[in-house]
Length: 248
Image 1 (cartoon, one colour):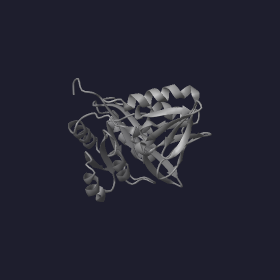
Image 2 (tube, rainbow, N blue to C red):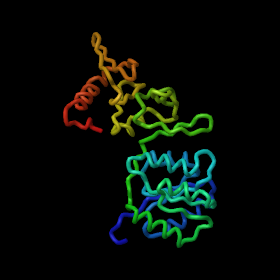
Image 3 (cartoon, one colour):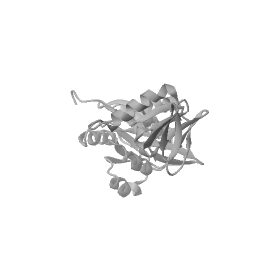
Image 4 (tube, helix red, strand yellow):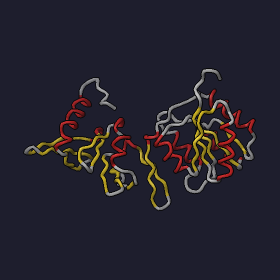
């Protein structure tokens, strides 16, 4: 593949020997540039929040979120990575191909089959850029739920956690507000206060009373600190201007 981009691949398997073997076989392929590993589907989604990959090689039967459910989540990405299932259970093949996966490898894995799967990844469209911020994984009582970023109205700092405010609930995630401010800026989130980020798309009113400014988001009024007032006004004006993309 002279001149072609090297693939970045994520391997997901809860069993370390199987995970290490697949990663080793992929690293031997000259078309693979980087191999990242995760021991669960939930961990895979956390990895994808930090960086995009071109393909995901995933086991199907795993504790918690299964490989099939992971593939369903990946389908909601703006530009989803290619998916290859690696499993000891062939009965899931029909379900897998209904999800439009690129290949289905049965354990024990042969190097020739891994090479064939990589070829199919390349020929199915080559490297694609995933959009990991489409959903946010939230864990509650051993269950991982995926909250679409577009549904989050605003975010509130609460100690080491942040609370996501949506129409359907207000889950907590253990991520600092400052990190979300950096990572979600391109998605239209802006800091209005030391403890709040708001999604500009959900701001319905800007109120001013005696020099104090607030915004209405989802029917709730939130204060805007003086240091953030000018930036907020500028962003809202640009967003409302005809032909503007809102900076996102």
